[in-house]
Length: 342
Image (cartoon, rainbow, N blue to C red; front, side):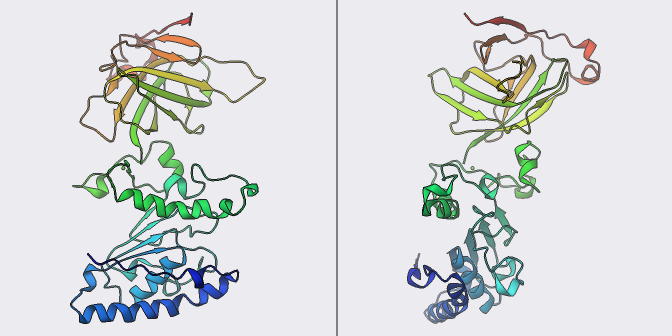
């Protein structure tokens, strides 16, 4: 494998951004000459994979245009947005620039480009604010660069087996957070192209009034390892006898789960404290779908109990009956017993 690194740091790191943008096509012409020489020496366009960061993503696209889209692959890492938003395909990276174009968007509300530019476009964390990056301008230059540069580290992580990075095709980030985009049929027969270990969690409550707030779930296995996930507050709306499905991501894969702890918060400081009465909860592993679900009669959870805030909830041994009974709450026969923790 031949790897060629293009160092255009001197030209790209100018205070006059428009100047650097205007020079992109000139850089592309230089790279085309290099590739022409490689072809003379026996290389093939099919084997060429260009990886471009920010302005480099568009430069890669310009090179691809010069070869009429016959390059094997172009990977765009948070392609630059300023001066490129709304431009014609010939003036930016485009799916026709290579046989396969994939893009990681990590700063769409800042230095990056928001619209899809490839055959597959990835939007980690919605493509905006990345975990661990500064939230205020008082952090200095890192505030402007961190989200933008995260695409590079995500791509590097995808090259190793140590980081579990899974993506799901979805038409919006909101639908993804609400657990509506967990099908991987577009990638069949291959699995979903993995950063966390995903679970679908089905929850049914029996509170008379609707409860809405932040739900945190912590898993613990028999070895004492723990993994915690915080559910999107928008998704955590619970109505009596109505099943909701949430998408949960954990940073560890706990196979033999022994304990599940739940914490529910309305976010109100002065309002009353509410209890959330769990009638049924079932976990389905999306990362390892061959595993039986944990829940219903709590198969795989040895002690069979949850800790919920400061309220101990003993889960019912009788699950919700399938079929017609779901439409008739009076037929539900599961009744959790609540008591205060000692």
